Image 1: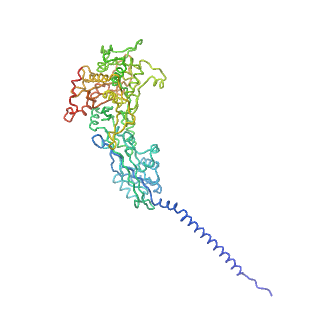
Image 2: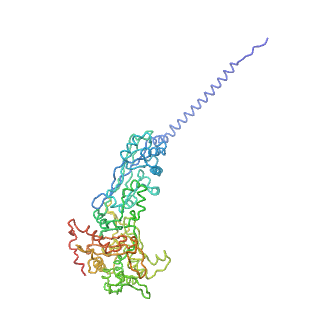
Image 3: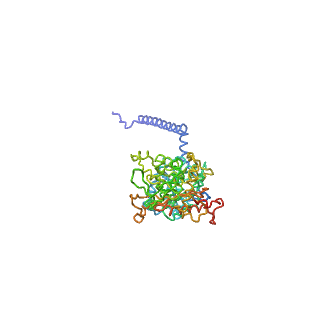
Length: 628
C-alpha cells in the first residue's frame, strides 16, 4: 500500500517564518539603534553647532548705515543735506528667480530695457549675503502703489525709506563741495567692508570725497528675528550708528554769487582767499553743473551732454586748469631779483620795445612795441614791462628762478584739502633734461620771466603766490574746511615761510602792484576808479597759440578759442590785506581790461557793506596812499 504524498511541510514553513521574524527584528532593532545613535549625535554631541545654525536661520544681523554729516557755508547756510526718499531694493537670496523678478518689475513700473540692464548690473554688484541692494531711487507715489499691488509677484522686493544726499544750492558749489554717487567695484575693494555695509553711496569729488571718512560716520547694527519668508518679526538687539561729522566751509554764498555774476557767463575761474588764514572765500569754475544729477545715478543722455560739451562744465578750472601765468608772476620774479641781489629798487633797464641777448639777433618783444624808455622796478611792475623782466630773468638764471618760484608754490600742490588739485609745472634744467633730453637754452629763461614758455599754473596757485606777497612770505595753505565738528583742520605738512634778507623788498613790490591799479600809467587803473580802498594787483595775458617772430597779434585772424587768456591777481586793502583774488577768463584776451574788473567786483562784494560804503574794520585804507 503506498504512502500519501505531503503537499506542504508546515513545520519547515513555521521554522522559516520564525527565522525571518528574528532576522527582521534584529534588523529593525539595529536600525532603531542607528537612528537613536544618530539622534544622540545630532541632539547632544553637535547640539551647539546645529543650535547656532538654526538660530542663524531665524536671527539675522542687519547693518544700520549712519546718517551722513551735513555741510554748511561759513554763515551757516546748508550746502549739502540729507533728504528723505523712497527707494526700491532687491534682496537676491529672498527672490525665487531674481532675473524674472526684475522682468516683472520693469513690466509693473513700465520702465525701459535700459533700466532693466542697469537693475541687473546693480544687483550683481558685490555685497554681503541677504543685504538689500537699492536699484531705483526717488519713487513716485504711483510707483509705490504699483509695487504694493503686485507685491505677490515680486518676492525679495521692498520699498525702503532712506536719506539721500541733496545739494540745495545746486551748481553754486558743484566744483568745491563735489557730489556723491554709487560705490563702484573698484571703490568697494578699497573700503572697509564692515563700516560700509548697508552704504551704497560715497563722495566722488570735492569736499565730499576728501573728507569721506569724517562725513560717513560709523555703521550700527541690529539683531532681528525673521520668519521663513525673511520678514522681520521683532528686533532683539540694537547698536545705534554714529552719524558723520558736520563740516563748516570757509566759502561764502554771497561772495560766490558775486563772483559768478562778475564772470557774466564767460568761461573762467575765480578764487578768493583770506591771506591771514588760507581760508577759501569763493571758488568758481564756469560753466558749472547740477551735482544732484549724480547722487542717485545720472542718465546716459544727461551725462553725455555734460561729458561731450565743448565748454567742459565738469572740468574744475580752479584746481585742474593749467594755464601759462603770464605777467601775474612778475611780482614773485621781482622778489627773487631783489632777494638774490641781482637788482635793487633803483636798477634801471632801457626798453626800446624789445630785448636781445648778447650775441643773438632774436628780438624778444615787449607788449608795448614803442617801448617805455628807462624803467626801474616800480615802473616795470606798473607798466608790466616785459623787457625789464627779460633782463631780470637772464640775470637770475634758470636755476635761481626755478628755486624761487618753487618757494611761491609754483610746480607743486598748495592746498590742504583739495585732492583734485594739479601740481602744475615749474620747469628747470633737470626737468628738461629728464623729459625732453635736451639742454636748457637762455631764451627759455627769458620767457619764463614773463610767465610764458613751459610754465603752467592753476588759478589757485596764482592766488596763493599772490597771498604770499600780501602776507610778506608767511605760508597759509588754502583750505575749504573752516571747522570739522567744531575743530579746525590741522596742516600736518606746513610749508616753509619765505624769509628775505631784506624784508622791505615786500613793501617795494607791494607799492609797484598798487601803481598797477592807482598809478597814472597803471595798466589796470580803469578798474580802480571809484575804489574806496587801496588795491594791489597785477594783470596777465597767457598765449594760447604762438605768434611768429615779427608778427603782431590780430584778434580778427584768430579763432575765439585760440585767443589769449585774460588773468588778473590782486589783494586789498593793499596796506592791510583781507582778501586775495585770482581771476582767469578763457580767451578773454585782456587781463587788465577783462579780468581786472572781475577782481574789483569780488573785492567790493567782500569789503563793502550793504550801504555800498567801506566796512568799518577797513576804515582808513583810502587810495591816497597809492599815488606815486
